[in-house]
Image (cartoon, rainbow, N blue to C red; front, side, top):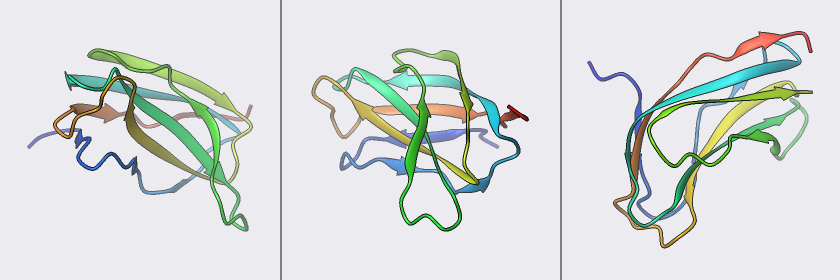
Length: 113
């Protein structure tokens, strides 16, 4: 069994996780990047997006600092709305369709605020 997610740049469009309900008004989000094969792009980007149930569009709650190598990273975010998802993409340089990354998103550490 392979644990984690592998993403390729392919056509350049961002990827989105399934949406999930928030578990508190604030959380620490963590990722462990195990494989990083980005030749054209300069970084892998993870954005935390959120919205309330009645909203029709997503807004940015926060973003990880651009990931440029393997290893762990985290982002603390407060003031989360009711529904959360992750947006994944590549940026900088000259992204190529074979730019790829393998990572494991950890379960958020929820808290009241």
